[in-house]
Structure formats: structure tokens, C-alpha cells
Length: 84
Image (cartoon, rainbow, N blue to C red; front, side, top):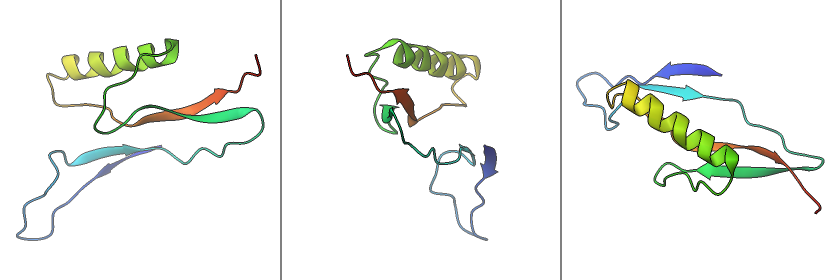
């Protein structure tokens, strides 16, 4: 995982509202695990399960504590596949 910084070209204004971003490596999925997208860039978390509720609360906490200057988006991960 790393934090990056966007830099506009000389004499040009950035088209993005924030200059910093956080990246994580791609998760390779296999075995009894499945890919799950908890919320996207333009959608709120679904809160359909406990993990979604925790991510939504975390995102809200960060936004409030940073006075609207930090927001996390596009939560994705792996979940254990259940055969029941």
C-alpha cells in the first residue's frame, strides 16, 4: 500500500479535487474466496452485512474528523465463500 500525490502539468490546473491518493495491491482471488465490492466511487456502502456497516462507519468517521478533507472510496476485498 502506498500514498501518492498527483501533480498537474506545468501551467495547467488539476482536474481532480484532491492531490493525494492511496493505492493497495491487487488481491488475487482463488480457492473458497470470492470478490466483494462494498461500495464504489459514486455509491454509498450498501450496509448489507457487518463488514459493510463497519466500512461505512469508518468512512463517515474519517470524513467528519478530517472536516471533510479526506474521504475513502471504492472499498473492495475478499470474503469467505459459504456453501450453506
